[in-house]
Figure 1 (tube, rainbow, N blue to C red):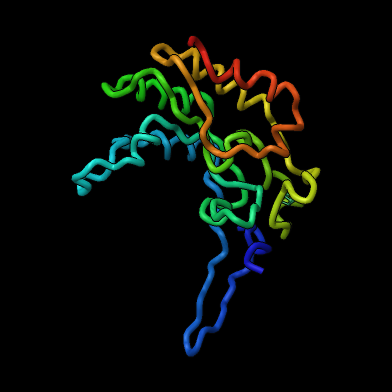
Figure 2: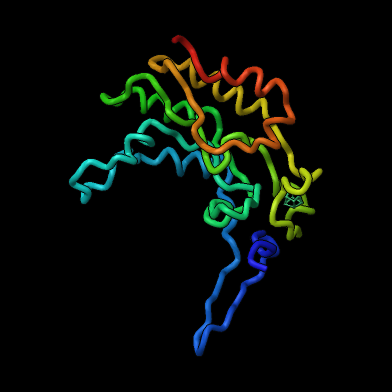
Length: 205
Ligand code: SF4
């Protein structure tokens, strides 16, 4: 029931009684899109752990040179909460906005030329679209991709490849990786994606 109400346009408020109290789930928020999304990610974040943490944080090393390029996930995998946290409808940053952040990253003293991840909840759903037609706004499918890819789901694999290529061309960048999850059902649709991905993500040796 919760999964079926993940559309902000038609999702209903859910209430479940528990003893003499109730658990309330509000409908999901509307996705932040376009220039608003770019503006959000271009805020002057420090890209550092909160100063209240005194000791070394092992997990920080894995994310310090990573960049978020999209929000939301349409996959609806039952083991994962990202679609609930960020919403079912996808939104992606513009290429210019991502490149601006890469330039900031390359200015950091600790940057060694490797962007460890250009990703998001699902990296290869970058620039894909759902929620763009009326059918989506009245939809209760938990997943846009399973059991079959919905005809209203717009896939643009080339956009992610172009983003990776543009990123590796930035001065100071030697390697660009994708460490975020990949939807294999989407990746396998496009033979050129798998054929070109190694060339797209690694420049130099
Ligand atoms: S109509 Fe299709 S693409 Fe749109 S939200 Fe529903 S399942 Fe996803």
